[in-house]
Length: 317
Image 1 (tube, rainbow, N blue to C red):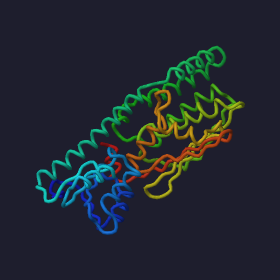
Image 2 (image 1 turned 180 degrees about the vertical axis):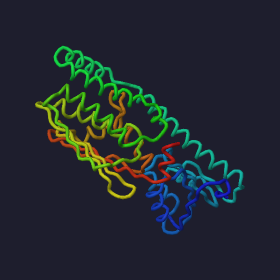
Image 3 (image 1 turned 135 degrees about the vertical axis):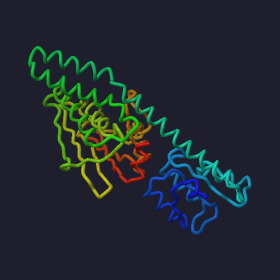
Image 4 (image 1 turned 90 degrees about the vertical axis):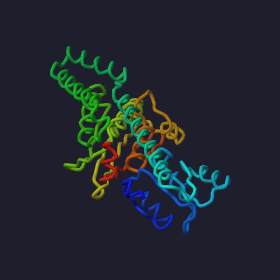
């Protein structure tokens, strides 16, 4: 029935196999039988919810007999909907289309949010850059022109709205990072050391504004608040055919475990915060940000970008 709609269907023999599929494929919907070998539909659904929200990956549970207890357990385990067997074709397809439409609507909301966040240039950053350019115009006109050119590129890339509804690239993101760091290096001078460990000719697709905000956080929240300044380092390398590793680290003031939880649960100053990046990373790649930090030692934020044909098409939509 599903292939006739048509959808691309991946069938699994049991709950364990289903979870393996969920971990490696980018899915729009999971349909679970309540009774399955080795694991129940409830157990599989709860495992899915450890990684994906109800919006990121909808789950429809099917059962031959629905009693109030089963309904409660199904929704408590994280199911979006429950359908009793036997069912007719039109109801089955309607339930599925509703769940997929809900997911796609959430994707559109994420794109709109990204467009809004991308359109914002933080006032303090704008003020500081303009002051730097004005000061340099009296002292070093060539340097003032360089900073102005980098600032122009930073603004152009930030306002490139084609990237709000489509996938960007690592090279585009790196261009924004380079312009941003060039500006901040002019401001901080010897107090900011910049290190790159980027594999030669590396490039891949990713959602916009996944790296630059991490670099900005490292400068603004890590190095700028450390007496004497410090260094930040961007690492990017290919780990396998469809997997890339990115890490932004600094030797700034660091964070406590409670502070890490706080930054992952809120967007600071209306910026593209870690919460937003982490949500999109889970949504598009099925992975999460890893944060290692200690007070007075520094912070390292890393991510794994999984690229496959399904996720690429999903990001483009």
